[in-house]
Length: 360
Image: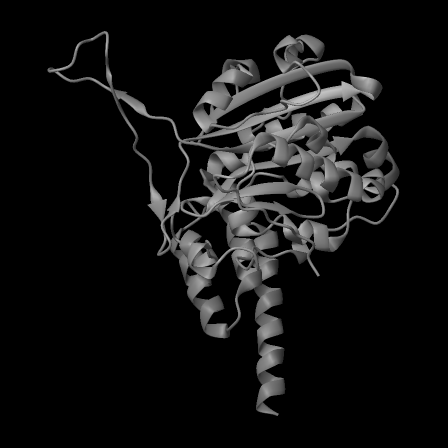
């Protein structure tokens, strides 16, 4: 059974009450946190108190109106990842994107159908790859749509953003703890108008929504990272705001660096606001190289085929499978990768076996 808790804030909730709630929760779960440090960032305070859900390896605040998370937080630990690297790992191939969360009313949930044929991929905020060292159930929880997924540009998701995720994960090899808060941003464009003063440009918010449930597509994504060694030594903090679009692989991560205050102003969140003066913490890229690895970008065609392979494995009927495969063939790829054809052949055989059993 999934372990999740939720809090709804009201006008009567005060900062003191929230602080007491968090401290009480932290003390109650101390033994669990010692075994699983993914939630250790909570000691620096939660960014907000609305619609919180606690999963095995991350915490999320869900935006019911937009059908996406407002933010997702988790921690990585050098010691924990080192120990778990010798244990059997969970795998994302056994995970499926899911819409159901008992704490979110059905009418406020995103569904897989919202994403199908939308032109947008399902982008993880807490990466599945960061949580492969836990149980399969914990891995599965990273695939809950409203809790951890936003509509993300396909190329961005499979290339530049993925390289940022690798960079963040590798920080746990250099520091004892890596605390991450990440989520969507909605940033307006500046519009020129003949009637407007050049010193006061008009700003306009423009973004897409997808599907019957009108899932909001963020214009940007943010990732704020706080690193530390034991006893709050050698701390560093960095915040990065990435446009939700294809990014040139030669762009430096520092090109997208912003202040933590900038992210707070745009999101209305308070980040890492307890126990430390975060404005006095050194910039992350002064503590470590912020160079991203893996400049060889995957082609859009390859990323698209990866997504098709996932959809093939989820087909429930022969009709669904054939319709999807017709769509693949209509793309007229120069080469259909062998793992996509293998996924199709395997699912075809599985559905054929199911049909034979049903006929018997």
